[in-house]
Amino acid sequence: MLKEVDMTTYRRVKIFDTTLRDGEQSPGMSMNLKEKIEMAKQLERLGVDIIEAGFAIASPGDFTSVKTIAETVKNVEVASLARATKGDIDRAWDAVKDAVNPRIHLFLATSPLHMQYKLEKEPDAVLEQAIEMTRYAKSLCPNIQFSAEDATRSEMDFLARVVEGTINAGATTINLPDTVGYTLPEEYYDFLVTIQEKVPSLANVDISTHCHNDLGLGVANSLAAVRAGASQVECTINGIGERAGNAALEEIAMGVHTRRDFYKAQTHIITTEIMRTSNMLTRITGVKVQPNKAIVGENAFAHESGIHQHGMLKNAETYEIMTPESVGLIESNLVLGKHSGKHAFRDRVQTLGFDITEEELAEAFEKFKILADKKKTVFDKDIEAIVSKESVQVPKTYKLKNFVINSGNHITSTAVIKMDKHDKEIEKVGIGDGPIDAAFKTIDKIVGQKLELDDYSIGSVTEGEDAQGDARVVLKTEDGNLYSGRGLSTDIVEASIMAYVNAINKLYYDEPN
Image (cartoon, rainbow, N blue to C red):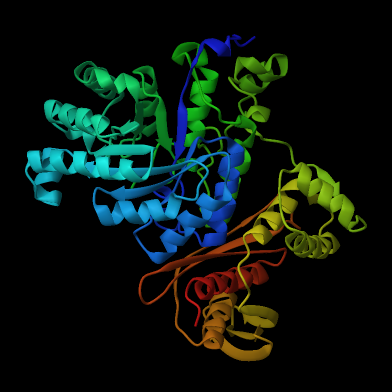
C-alpha cells in the first residue's frame, strides 16, 4: 500500500494560478469575458489560493475581466499584475479593490541584462523604484506581491538589497522567478537557500516561485523551490503560457500530494477537480494537451503492455502511483437516452459538476435531445461537451439557419448557406477547394469581411462511428486579433460551419459593429 502520512504536521504551499494572465498570453489561448469568468469559477472550485486575473492596464478588456472576476469569486484571492509605476498600480487597484481578498502584483526586472537593455536604468535607480512603488502599492492594498523579474540571472547581492528593501516597504510576498526557464533544479534550490541566508526577513513573508518551461524544467524547478522553502508556487492549468509555457499546476499539485512524505508539504487543491479544470480549458481554447501529458493526458492512466496489464490486474500499485479517480477521471458511461426528461438531464449535469443557469440548461437540453435522436448511445463526455459549450456561449449575432453543400472529386465544391442576423435572413453562394473551404468562404460573404483562417482542426468527442465531431477554428482579423470558435455535431461539415460562426460571434461580442 502507498504510505499514509500525517497531514497535520506539514506546511502549507499556496497555489497561485496565472492561467488567465500569463497563460492567456500564449498563441491561441485568448478568452473572452464570459469564458474567463467560467474559468475563474472553476479555479475557485479547484481550490487555488490566488487567481491572477489579468494585467489590468493592458487594455480596457483586461481591466473589465479583472474587475468582473474580482467581484465574482469569493473564496480565493484575486490579483492583478502591474509594472512598478503609479499608473499601473492605480489601474490594478481599481480592478481588484472590490474583491473579498485583493492583491496587487507588481514587478520590476533586476538582472543586469534586463536593467541595461530593457529598463535602461542603473541598479541604484531600479532599487529606488522597487522600494518606492512597493510602498505606494501598500498605501492602497494590504496584500502586495513584488516580483524581481529575471531573478535567477540577477547579481545575488543586488537582488538581496531589492528583496530586503521591498519587504521593508510592505511586500507580503516576494516572487523570485526563473523568467526565461534557464535555471536547473539544483541551481534553483541553491539560489533560494542562499537568498534566504542573505535576507533573514524572507522568513516573515511568502516566498514565491514562477518557473517557465523553456528547458522542460518548469515543474522540476518549482518542486525544487518547495523543497528549498518556497511557500507559494505560480503555475497554469495544462502548463500553458508564453513560449514553452509555465509550470503545470496539475503536475505540481499531484507531485506534492503523491510525494508529501518527501516534501513535507501540502496544498489545498481539490485533486478530484483537476481533470474537469483541464478539460474546461481545452474546450474553451480548443487547444488539446498531448496524449502522454502527465496527469491529464489521454494516455496518463493507460496501460497497453501485456506485462503492465498483468501486474495491474494483480495489484494496481504495481504500475500506478495514483489512481485515475484521485484526479477526477471517471469512465464515460451511457447515462441518458432520447426519452429522458429535463429533470433527469439536470440531475446528470449537476452530478458532472456543472453549475449553469436555467437558460443555459434549456439550451443544452435542446441540444441533447437533438443528439439523442442521432446517436445510439449518449455518454458523459457528450453531455460535458454540450454543457461546457453552452455555458460559455456568447450572444449570437449570426445564427445558422441551413446549408447545402455539393462536393465531389470531379466537381467544384459549392456551398449555399442561409444565416439569420437580427431576424434578417441572409443567403449566399460560394465555391472553394472542398466542402469546408467553400462553406467558410460563403460565410465570409455573408458577414461582409475577409477573415484569415489561422487554424482548423476536428476530432471526436467519444469513440464510435456515430460520435460527435468537435471542430475548432481560429480566425485572424486584419489587425491581428485571434478568435477561436467551436462546433459540435455528428456531421463534421456542420460542426465546422458552427465553429466558424461561433468564432465570428465572439468577434462581434468583443468588437460590436
